[in-house]
Length: 494
Image (spheres, rainbow, N blue to C red):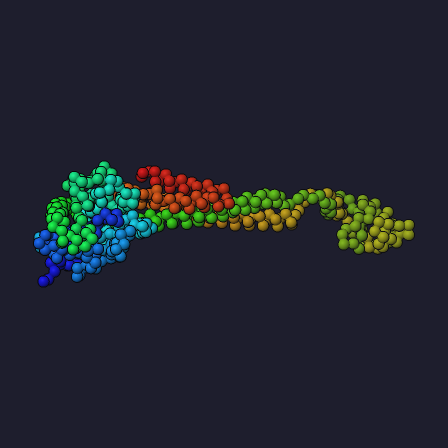
C-alpha cells in the first residue's frame, strides 16, 4: 500500500511552521504528530501503531518514513538535543489537498553541549532568512515544569534581540505533556511575549514515550489512554492550524534588510577603529610638524639680523682750493707735502721739487715717502681720510636664516597637507559614528529588542584598551572620548 505521506519538497509552500524549543520539550514529537495530522494517519485502538509514521526517528521508530531525511543524532542519548541542524519537512495537508506545508525543525537548547546554543541561534536566523515567509513560530515548552528554564529564557531573549519584531507577531505556544488543567507552567513567566489564549495550546503528546510498542498494545487501558490522548492532540492541532490560517504571514524580506544593517554596523565599527588610529597618527604628525615650524620660526627670528654695522677708514679723493706735493710711485695717492708753497708744477720736475719742504737735506729724496723727488708733482686733488659706517653680512647667520626660512616654507606646506588629511580622516571618523547611529536606529525599528550594548561592547572595549596603551595624552583622551561617544549613541536609542 502506498504511503499517505506526500513529500512535495516544495519551494513554494502555502504554510510555513517553525518549531523552537528546549531540549526535551517535546518539539520533535510535536513535529511527528503534525506529520501524521497532515497525512491523516495516527493512533487508534484497532490499528495500534501500524498507521503511525514518523519523519524524525525516536525510540519506538528508529527510522524515518521513506522520503524524509533527518538530522537526528543518537536517539538513545536523552542528554543531548537530537536535532543538530535546522531541517525542513514538506507535506501536503491531506484534508486540504491544495495546501503545501513546510515544517522547520530547529536545534534544541539547554543541551549538555551548551557551547552550541549561540551557534544554534545563528543557524536559526540564517534559516529564517532563507524561508519565503513564516506563518507561525511555535515555541514548545514542557508543561509539567513549574518554571521557565534559564536556557529557554536566554534563548527567547537572544532570539528576540536577533529577530525582527514582525516574527514575534506570529508567535504560538504549545505546552507538551499536559492538558490545560494539568499544566504546572505559569503563563505569567512568558507574559512579555503576550501569549494570546487563541495561540496557546496543550498536547499530551506521550505517544512515543512508551518503553515499546508491545507495552501499549498488550494493555487495553494504555491503548484507550493512547487513543484518547491522540484525539485530544488532533483537536489541538486542528485548532492551531485554524488559527494559523487566520494569521497573516510574515515576510522574511526584512531579514535581508536586517542583515544589511548589521553588515553596515559591523563595517562602521571596524572602520571607526581604523580611522581613529589613522586620525591619531595624523594628529601626532601634525603636532611634530607644528613643533618643527615653531623651532624654524624661532631660528629664523634669531638669525634675521644677519648684518652688522662696522666703522672703517675710507680714503676719498677731494679737490682742494690749494695744491699739494704728491708722489707718483704708490698704488694710492701719497701726499708728501700738503699746501705746498712752491710754484705750481703739475708734471714731474726734479729741479723744482728738490726745493720742496718734503725733500730731505740732500734735496734728492722725500722725507715722507723716501722716494726720489723726481717722482713728485703738484695736484689740487688729494686723498682725505674719513671714518664711515658700513653694513656687513655675517655669513654664518645668513646661512642659518636661509635654512630656517626654507624649513618654515616646507613646514607650512606640510601642515597644509597634514591638516587636509586630518580633516578628511576626522570627517571619515564622524561618518563612521553617524553610520553607527543610523544603523542602530534602523535596526531598532526592525528589532526593538536588539542588544546594541552587547553589539558595541567589543568596539568600546578595544577603544578603552587603545587608550590604556597609548603613550600620548592626546591619544588617550581621543580614544576615551570616542568610546564615550559610542556609549552616548547607544543611550540615544535605548
